[in-house]
Amino acid sequence: MFSQGKNFKSAFEIKQFQEEKLKIQLQYLNSHSPFYKNLFISKGINIEKIQTIEDLVLLPVTDKEDLQNPNNDFLCIPSDDIAEYFTTSGTLGEPVIFPLSENDLQRLAYNEFLSFKRIGAKKGDIALLTVTSDKCFMAGNAYSQGARKAGISIIKTGPGLPEYQWSTILKLRPNILIAVPSFILKLIEFAQKNHIDFKNCSIKKALCVGESLRTKDLNQNALAKSITDQWPIQLFSTYASTEMNTAFTECEFGKGGHLSPELIIVECLDEKNNPVPSGKEGEITITNLGLETTPLLRFKTGDIAKLYTDQCACGEVSLRIGPIIGRNKQMIKYKGTTLYPDAIRQTLQGLSNVDDYYIEVATDDFGMDELSIHLALKSMSIEMEKIIADSFRSHLRIVPKLIFNSKAEIQSVKNNPKSRKPIDFVDNRITI
Image 1: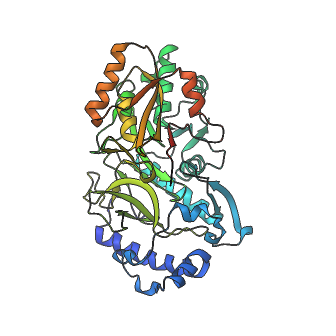
Image 2 (image 1 turned 180 degrees about the vertical axis):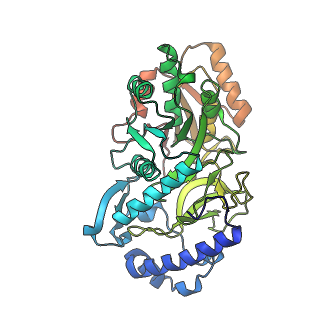
Image 3 (image 1 turned 135 degrees about the vertical axis):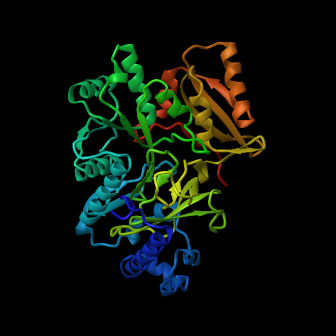
């Protein structure tokens, strides 16, 4: 394992290793990828000149619009060598198909094997997997295969049904929970209502997917605090996507998701596709390493975050990715303030009386962003409306339009049957 062990690699060794892998990947793309071969020819690119990580700026970026087109041009292997098909979630457009070969599936298992090792999991542990493995969703499959590779027993309960989850926990006594953080709150709520002694149950760690647990300065956010204040388990945040085929997982010190250098190269770019300084916000841009089916080169994920290159307290010096601050296409400009949906989520998560919500942005008569928050409250009062408004004013310096609905009305919007994830951000802006 390159990125972990008693003797951590130096920053120089990691860079040297990745640059050798990059040269191999470029040769592979030039030989096997119709899309990139044509791109190199049309742009007059000589890949032999790309020798270092810094040389990546000489190459054009790939973005989600490229993938939205029929993407057989990205396929690098014969179709009869495809072992399994996955798709993206389609949060910002139509889902994109990502097939994997048998070798890529093994790479995916190794990726999550590293995640389990990073959180201190070991052979003999038992993990409860509450993340779906159906609907072409990669994460559930990745954790399942990674657990087996690490010698960890896996229980695939899938999402939902807190009663069934608790019945399984009490019967089989898993010590690791793999879940979306907001679902952990539902488990706590069910346990409290049904007098389950959840604080003394077998679960000691939670590997969290899909939602951030950190603020911009890497402290616990309101969602994480609301879990750990009630249930003293250790939370580990992750960042991943189907396009990356790689997960960035926190260690015990919680200072960003660690890079696995053998799997991916990461850049953080500004709007002109130039690297930003360490610790500055930019768009996470990735180059897959060792992926043979649909590898991507300088792919802009749309996710805005910071990279950290200082040595972590765990001893590793490979870079880390901070929490996702927002998505490039979800940026909102409201009353002179620029913000992302995640900042709104964190404000709402700090309000205990908010039962459910979704965020809506539209275009007003003057072509400006109009921001509305649809809320279901546990108890409604004029005083509570003022508390919510004051919280927005304090945290974000703006007060959006507050619309109060029943929980059923909120759920009818969030639980779109065409989406495998609950939708809490609705973008109705007019695009020109």
